[in-house]
Length: 174
Image 1: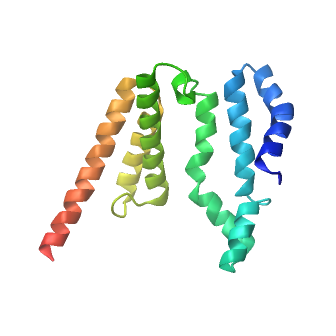
Image 2: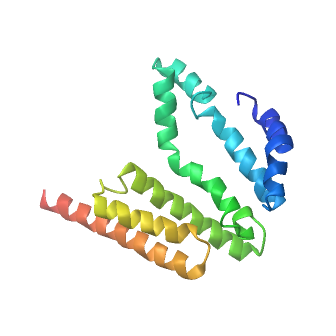
Image 3: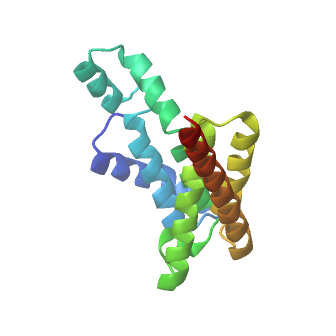
């Protein structure tokens, strides 16, 4: 809805969050979920106030700008579902500092991997196979377990190093 962030949260917290809590979702997760999606109203069509503003500055079509903005942040639409379905307190900053730090770093790398898969570009343009590997890496990194996060990190690092050295080989050959 087209409201400032604070007003948006107040409305969502009084309407949507109690319904999520009644479904058994922890209170903090429910409130972060509704806040996050309330903020996304600014870039999601048909409201897309931020996209309309950007279109005015760029002198472009507002709806086309809104759809491009939505496409570019498609990965960010997944993050609130991490609060709900993969409830792990460290994702919300609760717990020992080391666990929170490792969980946040892993989730951020997962979002980077998913963004690269979605856009088709990591360090270099990615073919379908590399994009599927990036999706697998993202899924492993986002899931908050040490084994899966470690495997996802190794896969992402392997993709990064492969692209880095293949790019270096192309530059040396030229």
